[in-house]
Image (tube, rainbow, N blue to C red; front, side):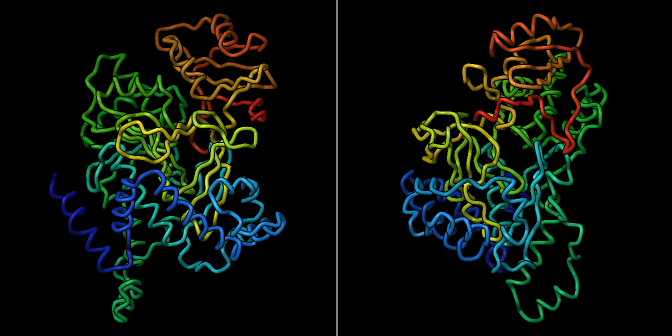
Length: 487
């Protein structure tokens, strides 16, 4: 291992954990130890954390106190994770209506709050982390990178996010950080307040985490939408080639554009250790295209800015292992718990989010879960996340088509560079098709094929387009559904 990662791993981060109040390294090591637990042991740990969270939320958070009182329910009556279904899900509308006083813990030290926000594919939402939750998130990030692609601290890392200010930094992140040698730090040292020193240094380190982790962030692409000019793609690939990152993260659209450019021009890919999509997952067809073009493995992780890392893939590439010690995830179909392998909405309870608890949070995604051991050695429940609820289609027979399935339908066609499918009303679609280079799209033919794939009763009006534009937050929505309300 190179010198810098070795110093971080065996000297600097353990020393920070030992001599200050910054527990990132200790939490990371404990998380890796818990990865070796059996499924039932993980369940017991999970329920212990859930019980503590419910008691805290009912005592300190007005929204949950009122909710449990209206239900005539006590936290003590939740005796197993399945009993949590007695509590209605917490929606984004609930959080926005109660924010800030109603949904935050009245006992929390607000001087240690960190404000974060999602980049908002469909809508933005604010979250608050206390010092411990921020530490847990940092450790969970190390864990996700280590388990999905063997990226260790201090190894080169390059990312190309969709919108740097909200997706990476969060709200009010770093703009008011104090310099390292300030009167406040000297005052803490004079009082021998090592914990206070640690927290101060944590904030400084967080604001300089790009340097600490050898992380280089490139600006997002310009305003061209999906029609990214070749010269821009070439310049990004040149930057990647010069830096030679072990880990390359990027918006799925960007990674796919790089892969198509490399394949179309017969070019050798830059040297990269592992690739991860950022701000969304890569559906199977796109994932294979990227892996083939770069000649390396592509790993998915799952999480969000307002909660942190939730799950990550293992080398089996057979679902994402849930961080069961940090989160409880339910898959719900028609208001009832889904069976293993059955598609449903995801409700997530963050077991470490105490400043602003979210219990049964309807994150807006659909997926499946699996319990069966697939032989990698990790026993945690596995998730298969298949897209946003609001991007999911339901046909006239009640069949569900996730965004992953629709993506694979269109991107398996060589003449299609990109698309956007908008359901104007139930079963009535407008389809924008961007032709691949030196290709033409038979609009009537692709509309007919989509009806055969989705629903013969559907109406599809197809148009040629030069590009698909990003949404306000910098991400792209390629499917806009009306029928998702049936979920």
